[in-house]
Image (cartoon, rainbow, N blue to C red; front, side):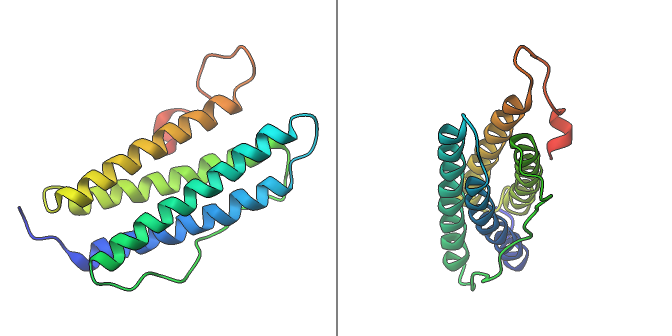
Length: 156
């Protein structure tokens, strides 16, 4: 295997940590802003997403310390259009998921052929993020619409 650029990998991992921590804050914040008849299932889903982001942050942080580096204490950018209807929340979520997906792909590029464990971690996270983005895409469709809300190429 080729030698891994540890500095580059840690940089990507720290940006992922920041993005995932921002997800915890963002999804929790969104959960406070849902009103109406469908509040309970949507709040539950948003809080599940916050929990998943926390789990991802923990996994990424463990990789950072495994590599002998210091995890970032920064939280990534928090997107907020200040529009709080469900569609706006989901669109912001889709944008943030696309950014995280791009970072996991960057991680994969940095470790591919250099670390089997990190490569598998990156692949698993890419799969998870792609499936999550697909779910959000489906949620943004009007009932009866089969066509994707956004093209897959829009989400990398």
